[in-house]
Length: 569
Image (cartoon, rainbow, N blue to C red; front, top):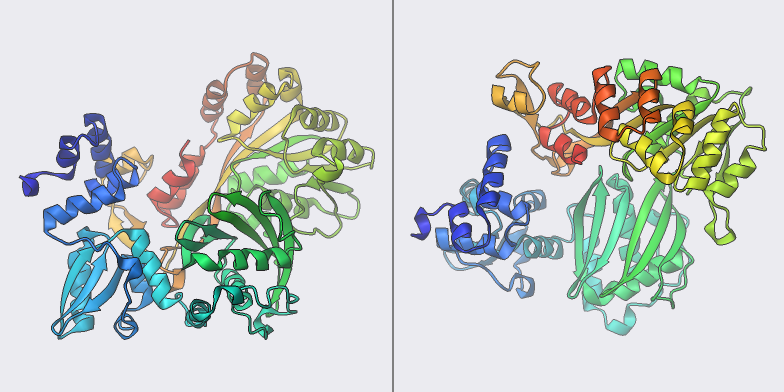
């Protein structure tokens, strides 16, 4: 009975999913292909253990329960490139006289993977078992150290061999002038320096140090997505965090309260600022470090991904004499980059441009930049109120967070200043209702706001490994690409060393421009909701974020799944 049941039927039979879940799963299958149990797992309808149990019963494969405690054969593992191991979540974990034993996570790719492994380990046979993804990845990180042959394995082995009381040795040493020249023999210092250097080398924007019950995970955010980098022994957590806190000049004795600090490092010829945030969690302090590289050339308006018509619109907006221009989107959607590009474009000796930010991420020559300081009550509102007395032509307010800031910004716009700012809303039309919900009168919104720009950052396909496929009419119609002919070649992500096996390399922006003309201003005065404002703007030619993203898909620059990921509401 087991082998004749589909995953949907099996999990309905087990009472784990509903018929509605089945319909939803099949709709996703029709849209983007794949396999039902994998989609149920991705949608959190079933647990990973249930996923593995289903395929163990279906295919007669064992589940390895103790991968983390097994002594792995380094010579055997070195036969398999780490990029391949991480991409396919496969790892050799033992051998007999006649066969190699491997664990895999996805039984649906087992035939292709096992074919490769038979070639790698010939003349030995290969027998596969299943294991949870996290355990396989943890074992991969443990046995390889990390992807590049950069000394991590040796550092980790030094730490594993050391006594617990030796872990803190040397962590109070001064930060070296250049991390690459660091001569400290303390393993913790070498490990932290190694993590920082690899993050900079790998173009990471954030480093996450995450303690759990039995391990310490290190993850990097690359092109907006988090990837696991290292899985370390839980016993070194306190020493790693203490070293980071010393570098950031934080209180290493205080572990009960959140702390914020800053580290300045040099790696070769690259100067990097790290904004450090710690919070207490159930298993110890969690650390996140945001990387800001100094000396990077800021992008221009021509380089941030604006299509030509929108670029011309932007040129007109930033040369207005007064009014508010809002940029909206979630954290990490590129709002600051867009605003810096706009300010740099209009920066000139005959203009007085002032900003108030939290924090000041990059220094802009010729522009006065003020940083919010909550400890001394220097808020956006207080700083902005002082700023309008500094005879500014252009003002940038990092974010409108409250009614007071919004009121001062609008008053500045109505008295002859061009004001740029940001809001956290899903789309452009929602920014109007957000201001009104804050308490701003509709007539003030309609008379001061000149345009609202919603944006997202999307990952670009790696051109070295992207995989083409022929689209169907149904797919094109569903994705808003009906203007393309059925059979048009689109692309999927794959993965190669050039893109660190992610399938993507770099990011670009997609944009939605809402211009407040007389008709839209009239709707605002009538307190119309966001849907009505959005519909009117689309009728007047506004392209939505989803449509802008699908234009990139049509040009082969990204994937449908990436656009759906960043534009979901």
